[in-house]
Image (cartoon, rainbow, N blue to C red; front, side, top):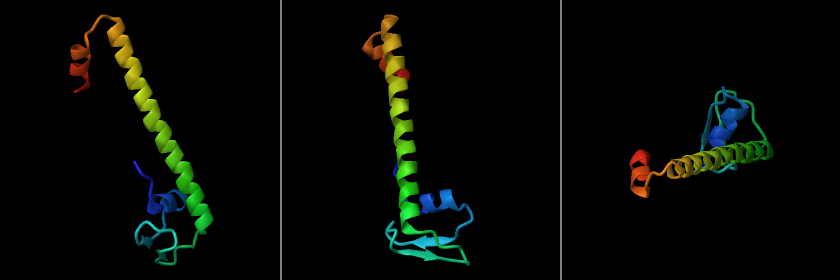
Amino acid sequence: MKIDIINSILAINPNAVVNVSGDDVNRIEWLKNTPVISNDIILAKQIELQTEEDNKEVAKEQAEQSAINKLKALGLTDAEVEAFRK
């Protein structure tokens, strides 16, 4: 999952009201007296959140592979293992 600019802003200020054109940090419209957050802070938060998301996906893939390996070690065939994955 790609973390966008709005998700990054809301992670910093959950009450922010903004409009972002084209997921471009330079095209943020701050609405309803929402305090402006600097582009550097938004981009740093986006990197942080994207890293967390990427790490979750890697951990999920590793757990899935570990489960597959354990099922195969128990003697299940590839077809039987695949049946569990669906």
